[in-house]
Amino acid sequence: MASRTATGWGRALVFVYGVFAIAATGRSVLQLSTEFSRAPLPYLLSALAAVVYCVATYALATGRRQLALVTVGIELVGVLAVGVTSLLLPQDYPDRTVWSDFGAGYGFVPLVLPVLGLWWLLRGVRRA
Image (tube, rainbow, N blue to C red; front, side):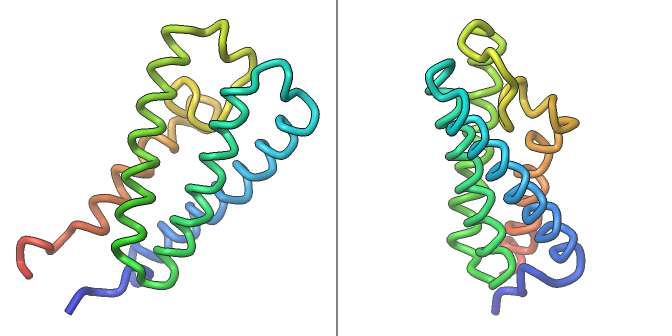
């Protein structure tokens, strides 16, 4: 039987995901409502990050392991893809977003968080 995702260190993970869900949602709403025409793609990607963080928080908190794996995997791909493109095309990212520069504006937590999340979700899979 799969262990619960919100026990032990998982509680801390749920908390951090929750904080990022709130922060990313607030930032993306502000960016989309006040500066959308300035950089539509990065701000839409910021909104996508917010949705991913919200769904990941829900999935981790409620023990929906498959949904958590999918959303945390999307998060890792997103932060890597946006991180690379924001470094290669800085003119397309006039303001920082959650995933730009690999999450530098958030202390690189967006880069580390999905790695920790995947580790937490996949730990013990070989034992099962």
